[in-house]
Image 1 (spheres, rainbow, N blue to C red):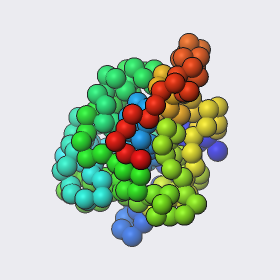
Image 2 (tube, rainbow, N blue to C red):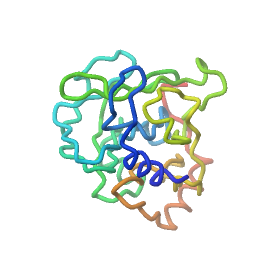
Image 3 (cartoon, rainbow, N blue to C red):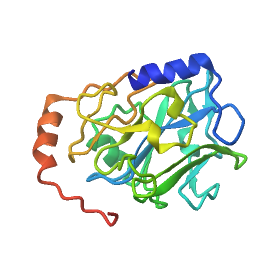
Length: 221
């Protein structure tokens, strides 16, 4: 199942609950990479059937503090639309992944993810919308998203807060994953209302060359 099909099925069902919250989810974590040659990123997707206003929404890691990184800059996010946050500048991230200018990216967050960490998404009232607690050291047999992003295996992954429901990106997989110019593998912003962005052949070639040359260059292990 492609990630676009997965999200559409969730929107059509309209019954996804946030684990432990007992409430219908409006936005879900749909991809993440805690460490990459080109920096880490997190993707959120509006899985409700209508637009969501991100004014006052926020992200934090395992400190679980609403308001730590403001997501208001996303504005109105359409049903099925995916948006991205990254530790790099938005412009650099868009360039590295050859993304369309229509994909919304907020950059330069400083509450960075670690190898074993949490992703917490809060609405404008400070209520938890979605959470993912992950870490291959903490949860044996689960993925480590270093230089390759994590994708949901099935709709059951969304809102479940279970890292066992996620799989690593591979070039050419069912999620449309490809190499960034830095040699990272992922598919940021390529699901939902936005069509997958075609990747120029030059980017594939450059990424292939760089993957063996670029060191991790990160403070996290």
